[in-house]
Image (tube, rainbow, N blue to C red; front, side, top):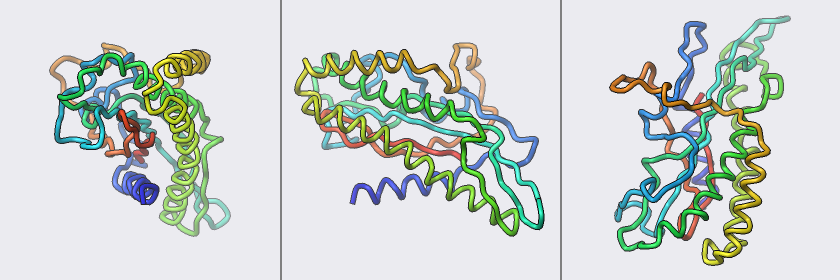
Length: 246
C-alpha cells in the first residue's frame, strides 16, 4: 500500500507543476523555493525540528529531505514528427521545513541528530548525482504532435527519476535497518562517517545557495510549488522520496 501511495504523490507532482516551455520563462531561485518551506542542505540542529505533536503521530521525530528537479524543454519538428528534449536542468536539494518536526515528549533530539544527518547526507549524495546529469543523459521523446511529445517526455522522465529515487530509498532503508532505526548509536556513528566521506567526494552540482540569494523582505519572483513528498525518516522512519517539478 505504501509504494502505491508514493507513486501517486510523484504522479501528482508531475502533472501539477510546470516550468513554461516559453522562451521567456523565469528560472526558479532559492528565494522562490524557500518561500514554499524548503531550505538548502545544511548541518542539522535541534531547531530544524520544531515541536508538533499533531504531525506524524507514529514518529518521535520526522525528517523530510527533498530533491526537487526543475527543467525546461524544447520541441522541434523533424520529418513529420515532434521531438521533445530537455535543454535546461537544475536540481534543488535540502529539507522540507513544513514536514520536519518532533514530539514534545521526545527529549533526546540532540542525540538523534547524527542519525537524521546521515539520512539527509544520503539524500544529498543522490541529489548531486541527479543534478550532474547532462541534458543528453536525460530522456527525450517523439510524438505525432507537440502535445504527444510533451506527454511522452513527462512519462519517460517520471520513470527515469523513479529509478534514481529508488536508489536513494534503498540506501536509506539499508542504513535505517543496519542501525536499528537509530537504536544502535555506535553503528550510526560508524556509518555516518562513511556516508559523509562519500558526500565530500561527490562534487556539488545542485543549485548553490548563498545568503545573497535571498533579499531581506523580498517576495518570490516566481511561484515554484514544492510538492508534499513522501516521508524519509523518523525515530521509526518511513522512506526517502523526492519530487519533480516540471
